[in-house]
Structure formats: structure tokens, C-alpha cells
Image (cartoon, rainbow, N blue to C red; front, side, top):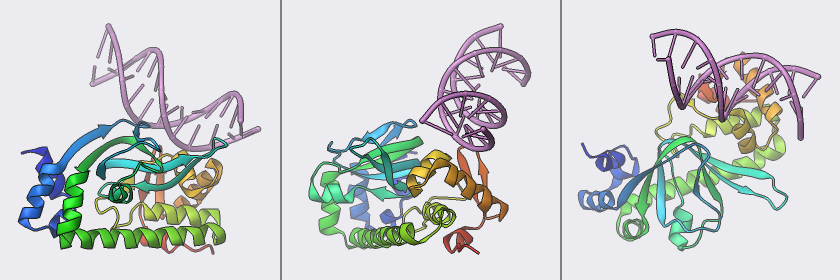
Length: 225
DNA sequence: TCATTAAATTGTT
DNA sequence: AACAATTTAATGA
């Protein structure tokens, strides 16, 4: 069994393509693995591929002029990202870093553009994904101004399990508390406290370098008592 | 397979 | 932010 064929068989948008479109897509994908902490792409560099996470976790981040690290989003298994830069044919605006061992599927820009011009199924997927992401980012702004640290941790965790953006995510995610802190924009100890509290409420359990979620809806709708 | 060591993650001050 | 404790991963017998 060829790994490249498997790559797309497990991909949501591939199911929306016609046989001919799928065939072209298959010829345009390659696979690459990244070790923990390694850069997929630095800000300012070009990456002429639309990228899907087969396994592992990638963060989209930047380092401020004062040297502070910020994480804007985490992309889990089944998620695809980078269509913005590929569409505009420009360098990446953010750092892409693998959190833990990560396998990526990479679709070359020419094939991406062909699908964009020719496939309605592909465009349906793109619109759905952009819509979902926009909703999440708007909610992030709202939440960061309104909610308590504990609730923010709960929401950010729940989002890593978003079934539209990351269809392959299962019950656990391999992420350390430090990375989670960067993602939620909180201190490490605030995240640690929040996790312990959420664990005592049986919404999740904490292991080292891993969070196991027991009640996803509970996290998503979490409200401080 | 088990023991030792190194590295990374989490807890505490 | 720095240090200590804990757990995992890696190495070699």
C-alpha cells in the first residue's frame, strides 16, 4: 500500500473531490516528518505548499520585538493550514513549529491552485474551514477580554478538538502545559491550576505532556460557577 | 528485559 | 524566574 494514497484517503476534503480531481491531488502531495520543536517554516520564508497535519501538532506562532513568544493557534491531526500564504503567493507571516513528533502532508502550490480554480468540492471545503476559523478567532478576542483563566483554558483545549478543523483528533492531545500556556496567553502556573481544577471536575485528566479529555462539550460550554 | 542516564515536564518557592 | 521533583525516552549490558 502506497503511503501517499493513504494520506489523502484519510483526508476530509479528498472525499469532496471527483475522481479526476482526486487523481491530480494525489500526484501533488508528499509527506514529511518533523521532530519535536523543529521549525516547519520560519516567518518570512516561503513555503509553497498547503499543509495538512497527519499526526502530531503544529503551532502557528511569532516572537515579539521584546522576545516574547506568542502562539496564535494549534493545528491538530486532520487540520490543514497555510492556504492564505499559498493563495497570495507570499512568504509566511508566522513561524510554524512542530510540537512533538509531527507528520505533515504537503500539497504543492500548482496543484492547490488547480483545485482552487477547478473543483467546487475543494472550494466548499475551503469556505467551510475559513468560516470555522474566523468564528474561532473572533471568539478568542471575546474570551480573552471576558473570561477567567480557567474558562479560557477550557475553551482553548476544546478548540484543539474542533471536529470541523481537526477531524482526526481523538480523546487525547499531546501538549505540555507550557505550550498550552502560550496558546491561551496565560502563565504556566495559571494553566497548571486551571487544569487541576478542571480535572477535579472530571472534565479531563492530566498526564505529563498529554491531556485526556473526558467531556468535550463540558469544556466547550464551560462556565465559572 | 532490566538498570542507568539524560532530557523534558511539572510542581514549588 | 529559578530550583527541585517526577516522569519519559534512550542507551547499553
